[in-house]
Image (cartoon, rainbow, N blue to C red; front, top):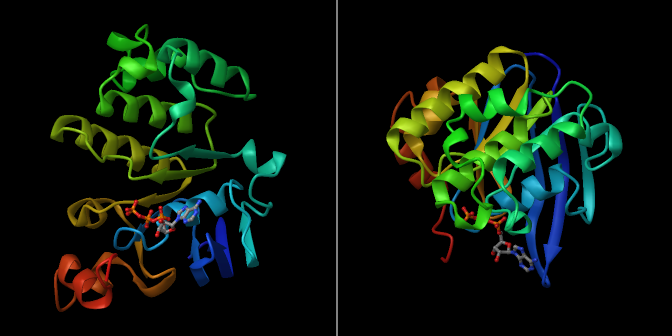
Length: 235
Ligand SMILES: Nc1ncnc2c1ncn2[C@@H]1O[C@H](COP(=O)(O)OP(=O)(O)OP(=O)(O)O)[C@@H](O)[C@H]1O
């Protein structure tokens, strides 16, 4: 396996007096799609926030493309698709993508990317008036417009119809095939099976299992493996 693009070592973090990440250790390689799976509330989004510098762990270390999360060197090379982005409410997707493109040295052409992702038809509609799925596509475009070397996608296809979901899968595979590392979270086991080169299963802030889909599903489906190794988020 190539050297890791993303490395978390013994990362712990408490929020609101509760330990959310508990000596979390895993990695993700360039040119591979890595899926982080786990029950609601197990800490996936918190992990992503730590990997992109939005939260700082209490202990442990994280390196992304050899840089500290959130540092200027990392920010220029890492794309993030968050679950929701309230901050963009009045902005029109076309303007947003042109603005984001202006922040990078070799961005995708905003109009071409909008056309590829099926955004052109609503490029002039304020973000807050878009449907949930349309907002997802704009979030995805924002994550990749700067041609990132590593992309972090938090539930990239949640709420997307099967057509758009399939084309999003194709896009994610193309990012991988172009050499980018991809870390994504999903609750859709079929998505992890279809897309992921490597799966990490997380429960209560720590990794409980990892491997390729083939390795994890030798004796049971991925969903059965998930159910056997994790507890309900509210349990
Ligand atoms: N700012 C915060 N203060 C206190 N607790 C928080 C904060 N942010 C998140 N949490 C808690 O941390 C836990 C993990 O949340 P997180 O969003 O990382 O879970 P998740 O695995 O992404 O869940 P889901 O699959 O439902 O999106 C939850 O119990 C959540 O309530």
